[in-house]
Length: 79
Image (cartoon, rainbow, N blue to C red; front, top):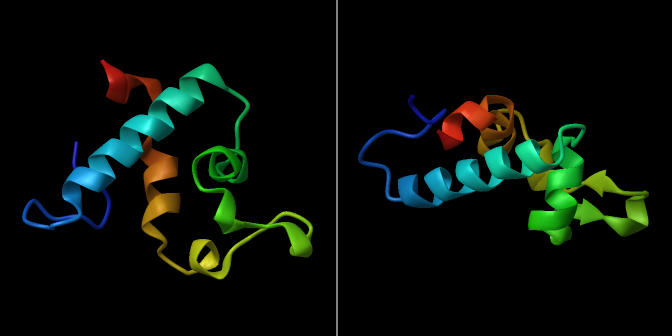
């Protein structure tokens, strides 16, 4: 299963694989979790407290790799 927007020779591939594993495990342990909930746990700086808990600008960008990974991460990835 290919990582979204991540080629085999991408230097960030290992980080993306680890992030996807973290997301899959988080989803398995928290079935009702949202992307924002995951960010609160994994990357709190990407939740803007002064904005009422909005996502940071980098997490709102079109084609955000983290959001793409979130959509594809599931418990099957852990098997």
